[in-house]
Length: 82
Ligand SMILES: [Zn+2]
Image (cartoon, rainbow, N blue to C red; front, top):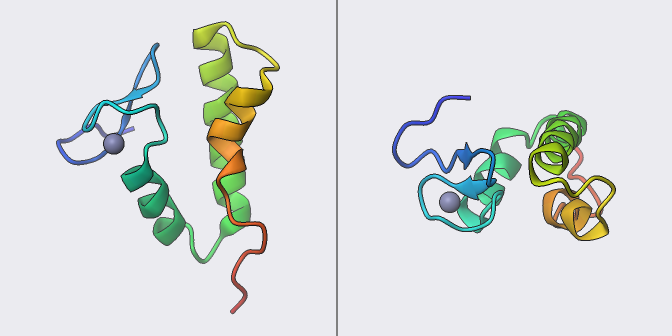
């Protein structure tokens, strides 16, 4: 993962945002992910699932519902169709 300024990249092992310091994925990152993966929402779920697994490992919160909500719960229910 590239971690340039303004990238809103996660800082491990705390999984806070390297740009704004909020819990990752922060609001700006969520918006960015939605536009980046607008054409392939399934890939976004897979990507976030991988992040969730890594974060659960780092934070020792394996199987945590709140962590699942944090990583996946914000996704819109119905993906846009083309
Ligand atoms: Zn951020």
